[in-house]
Length: 136
Image 1 (tube, rainbow, N blue to C red):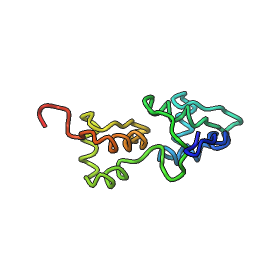
Image 2 (cartoon, rainbow, N blue to C red):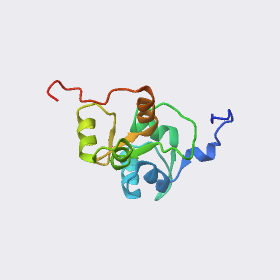
Image 3 (cartoon, rainbow, N blue to C red):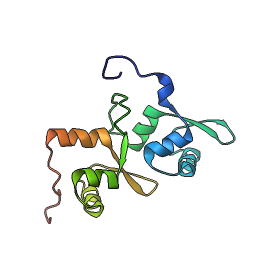
Image 4 (cartoon, one colour):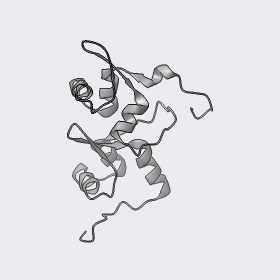
């Protein structure tokens, strides 16, 4: 459902390899490799033609992700650089917060991706992002 109460068109939820690559911020060849390896749910339609059901892709990358409205202005996943810029901290500091568990993120092709709706909800709730370890 969208914010106005209408259902999102199913065609917006069937993605091409290039669209999944854009969604995750990785190379299309990485996406195809993940599909071939079975680490990304996909349907093969030809020798190099894949289709991806967006809700399954999002759930596979971040199992704690919750369905959200299809707001075209809000990304599903954000890069470390984008979130660091938003939080006004350096990318290395953000990576430290990801590694200590203060900020949730998932690794996709050796790069961290942050599920934007969850980051937004954490910010809206005023959650503490300080390190969780006792030595910080």
